Structures are given as structure tokens and as C-alpha cells.
Amino acid sequence: MLLTGTYERTLDEKQRLALPKRFRELIKSDGQPLFLTPGTDGSLALYAGSAFARMAERLAAQSPTAQDVRAFGRLLYAQTQSVELDGQGRFRVPPELARHAELGRECVLVGVGDHVELWDKGRWDAYLAQLQPRYDQLAESALSGVAPVQKSASAAGSFTEEEVARPAQPR
Image (cartoon, rainbow, N blue to C red):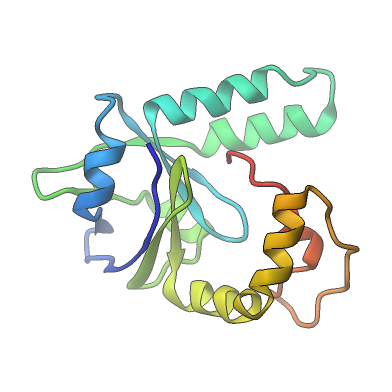
């Protein structure tokens, strides 16, 4: 399962969001529940059951005595919610997760390999505008395994090179 692409959607008055058919076909193919979790950079992450289980296995393989591992596990599992698709392919975004991602009415769903990220459209547009000009540099860093030196953030809500260049890890 390789989830790719970007889709704009509208969050309805009942906090439901339609999952694009292409994502539905891929993410529901394993017949397991879907999990909506806090993501990174102000997003939410939607995982198929099998992808969420793989991420949980990776987390469980880390040292249980490491403070960051314990803290991340608590935050992740305490805030993760199982969601179901209705007959029209929509899922409800729980209010606490919608607040976490500061979701407005206009949203963007982004395929990110093994999961889908859900972003507020304004936040996504700002993220994309900041990073798209550096696509080649980011590609070189991400694919070579060499992370660039961190530079300070230019404005509130911007992303440092270190935040952007971290190797992709399940959320």
C-alpha cells in the first residue's frame, strides 16, 4: 500500500471528511479499523490498522526506559482514536483532534506512503510555500541520509531545516 497525492476537502458541520476513493480503496483493503492520531507539524495522521500496528511494533522495540519513548507512547496512544468510514466514505474527526490540528472548514488530505495526513488548508499552503523551493536540497538530504545543519526559525510557525530533514518515521 503506497498512499500518494493531495486532495482538498471540506469538513462538514458534523466534523466529517470524505476520504478520496483512491485512498479508501488502499487504506481499507486490509479490512482492519482505521486509526486517527496526532501527526507532526500540526497535522493529523490516518492509518490503516496494519500500518498502525507496524508503527506500534517499532515503538515497542525501543527502550521502555527512554523518557522520550515513554512520553511519546503515552501521548500517541492517549490521543489516538479508531474511526469508521460511513457509506459515503466519510469519517468523523473527533473534536479534540480537530483542535490539535487547528482544522478549519477547508482541509487537505496528503498521501504520505503508509498513512494519510490531514491538514488545515491554510497551514498546508504555508508549509508547502516554505518548503517547495527547497525540494532539491531536501531530496538530497533525505535520500543521502545526511541531515543539514539546523537554522533558526524565521517566524512563528515556520519549520527549521532539522524539523523538515528528519528521516520519515511513522507517527
